[in-house]
Length: 268
Image (cartoon, rainbow, N blue to C red; front, side):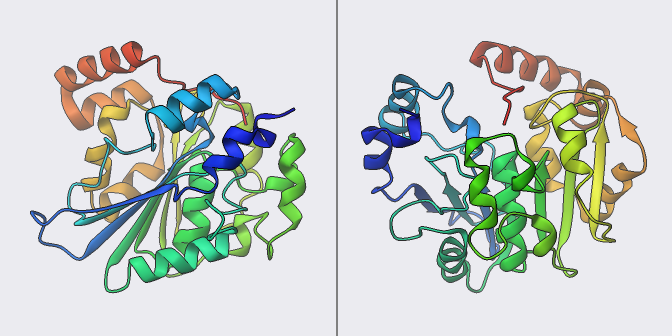
């Protein structure tokens, strides 16, 4: 029996699987939506699921927020189905999820964020929400090309098998790409040509976030013009990190990532 058929996971599907928080100290009308990846629990065992989802109630990105956002929405897909089936019994497909997010972000400038499967959802939902910016770290592009028993979902739910079906010409997309990762090279090849899809490449085989995670908040604070300037060359991940946050933060970042045993090469 697969983990997605587990009674424990099915029970968790009845929960909200989202957190909404506001920060009154931030004087903006900006909302950041964070989509957890399939690494929200790993490996695919009930023990791992219980530890991360039930006991710790984990959401990816919870500690790595957009500093100038006054509202934060964290979501997770406990079935690990690229959000095609939504997040819970009520918001049970990616379009119902988007409708919910649209109501929650009314009157806000929206940015969406995700890595891998979370990036896939960030692009689709960010497009449907007409977000100002999407930060996508090594997203999947076409689900029906994944070597997974769950890829059958790709042809369901109104074309949600391919992000090319959703790209909005008015949204700025920043696609952080690991150009030595076989799985990410394959997915990158499925992406169409768009003037507003800015691919920022890194000389690494690491899937997910291709540089030190300590750099993320700096990335979120940069202007779109500065981010676009990064798309003209391939970056060394450590040198890129060093230039943005300095040696002290890089060393601390390396230490904390090692200590937490962060999963950076999870296969989809």
